[in-house]
Amino acid sequence: MIPDHIHCLSRPRPSATNPGALEPALSLSKSLDSQAWVFPAARFSRGQHLMLALLFILLAPAVQAQKPSAHFNGQAAYDLTAQLLKVAPKRFNGSAGHLKAEEFIKQHFAAEAAKGNLETDTFTASTPAGFQTMHNYIVKYPGKKDGIIVLVSHYETNYPLRDIEFYGANDGAATSALLIEIGNVLRTHPPEGYSVWLVFDDGEEAVKAWGPSDSLYGTRHLAAKWANDGTLGKIKALLVADMIADKDLNIDYVDNSTPWLLDLLKVAAKNTGHSAYTFKYHESEEDDHLPFAQRGVPVLDVIDAHYGPWTEAAPDGYHHTAQDTLDKISAKSLQISGDLFLEMIRLVNQRP
Ligand code: ZN
Image (cartoon, rainbow, N blue to C red):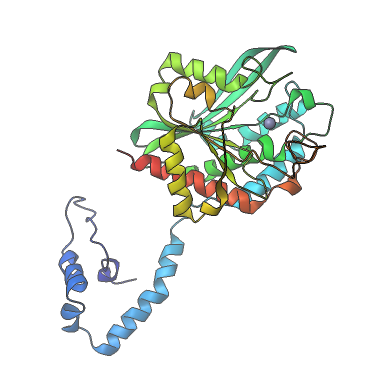
């Protein structure tokens, strides 16, 4: 066991019996801070000082290691992406793969379902291919403060691409895996601040040709529903994850996001050491943030829309092509994206 005063070297802590009070060790701590070693010198020899210092150096990492880590695991997110692609490579509306993807998501949140914290939001979308039944899944991690931070990823693949080998490794699969892995972190480290909700939304992609009435089916439905039931007013920030597992990751400055959230993403990138992977390109995006932005919710679209080499034959790179496969994404990029999302949650909580 480590002597108490070693814990107190840098910071006094409240006692367990009286959380507001500081332990008597505070006075020792103060003397250590301000008059280096004057007080302990009365009790310890020089040799004992060295022994204590050595003990501290040896044991500090062990004490740290005992704490369960609140860190995002990029490799785990990558492995989850591979598993999802294996069971549900094509996930277009109405397909067997679409159902399997939904099962995959639900399986990973059995613990939350048992607590009543997994909500299935079923709706019928009127599309150019007729009426389609769609499902959003909402996983809730209750926090201690009033307010909600929402993270969003779509999970389906494009209906118009159903006849090619389009798997959406980066577009839909990896960000669903990213949210599942964030769920793994939140399960062991429940939010201390605002509640965090994970949304796996359906029907982000166009069914025929992208336009206001043929896209964003799931989030348009959810934004309208949450406007009616009062949820929208509780949302402190809504962060969309899209195409951010690209091996060559650089997260765009999406200027139709909320300015203060763009500022916060810059801070998050700095704090996590990932600034080199952000804001190379500036653009506006039509993505799952829009239905919420239009209703006044603070939103951030976290996307890297520059995916693969852009050629005359493939003017959008790997985007919406059969090239969007597992080999184009990386655990490292998922690590960066996961780090940024967890840091964003922390930073949003720090705002007054
Ligand atoms: Zn897409």
